[in-house]
Image (cartoon, rainbow, N blue to C red):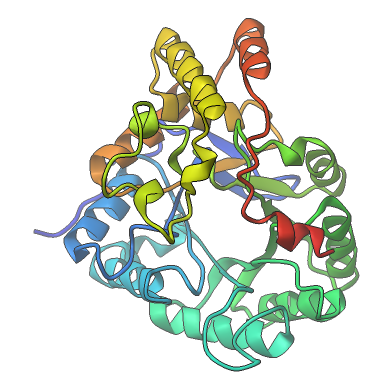
Length: 343
């Protein structure tokens, strides 16, 4: 049966302006970092992406090495475009990134012009697109001049292969420097993608002020702290969960007694608000209007629907915010700290 999008898809989702640009983004964005690899059945991938679109999620966030294996998420997304969503390309805001390892040898990682532009060409072929809406430098590379990295982003825009330029996991100082370089090249920095959650609040120190000052938006990833801010770990580590995997992105040693005590208290607060813990955690990242969107992942349509529903209640009382502040401390879960601090 031919897919027909929900005609009411834009009626429920709130949208925010990305910095001082003309771009409006949904408050919730679907990221294809995990659960869109070869182990996920194609029909599940298709169902999650099309259901997200039906719910007003028009921004889909990818990177060259999302999978596994690397490149698979872009291939899978491209198949959904070819099968159903391609007719709605002008309603979609699609991003990709390069910076981490992708292929062997010195030209398959980092921030060089050669790597970034070659990677973008590969991403476009995998997705079957002529352009992405935003192309990111996925991380700051201390071994490559920042002018070279930003110059590659500007070239991608000039070539029409990307409409906007973005950066991810850059420090506040390097963000300001990158924006200056791009501005000199006639390309504004559209957006920064940092990790941010109730348990990881580093962007509040300087970065949000910097982004506001330069007019760039902010899209927060890992809003659920690799799954810690969900109900999944309230009673221990379930078999097959992310924390049970030896090479998973959630480390069991993060699930300390103190962190779990705090998370259980947050769960109680979320219930008082009529939300799940995951919904409250996503909404919390959006309490500051300078955060344009929150990136979510999903492993099923049901989980997607739960997480997108966070946008139904974004407001917090002062008392609720104070209670969260009293409960929480930084849990040391920032996997991307080293990338930032390299600069």
